[in-house]
Image (cartoon, rainbow, N blue to C red; front, side, top):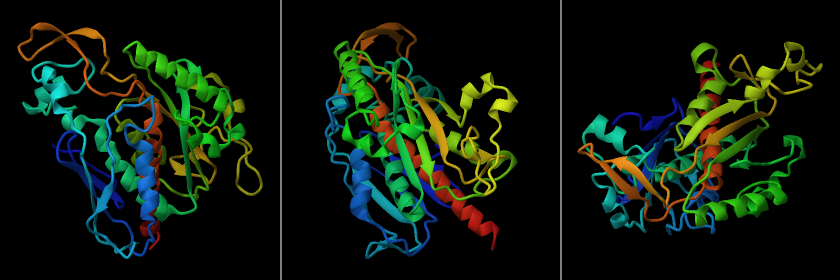
Length: 354
């Protein structure tokens, strides 16, 4: 199986399955001498872990990261950073009913078609549990990046949208509610809706918005390796993601050029930022902002028609512990992937100027 690594210079390779003994990763290319706060890395994992509130899966995993290499006296040594997160609360029997059955909108059928074998326990390698490894690597990247700030938050759940401009938001409020929305009034509506959806045995999607502040100028490459293209790839690699837009996004298509152009100030900043901090695939120093769309979780607690390995029509119903909405737990994952992209391009930028 290919495609287990992300990045060129700051590179993450992950391994493990949802119901195996552990998941983990190797971070290669992290510069030496970075002072790491290991407690902050664990706090990032805690933001993603299951069982943290009434609106997420109740699988109880401590998600404690154990580092095995690349760190000495809480400083990076420049060698590969190896880490493991042990799986402690697997209930594989919850998946025995789908051993020979394909769940709608899951990777079951495509994995079987491609590899001829699949780990049906929680989706195996296709499980979103793998994203915990990304959060660890992203937390390391954040500490390497120091002053650059990554602020992701829930912008919508179903049809309930955060009705505030980015400039009006107080990012310190993101972690004050279970939905991770920086507007308390919107957060309450979103949380109530998720609880209602859970009672119905159904699921709902939503969007995560991310704002990257204190960006340096000049990150990104022209043509195929544009900064926004890599951010798009990073976000679309996250489980359940169905869309990515940056800057004005699709709304920009409704505007005239005279309305959309970001006019310059004398210091090189722009009066507006419809470009989303990126022009010609290269960062211009303004805030980068983008939206990530997440579909409803495919596993629902309602009966559905599907097929089995023999191509027969069968009926199935989801069992076990699943998120009614992945968006609140996806917030730290979006930040982590954004940090990996920026860290990688920062190193590329340095190497191109040697």
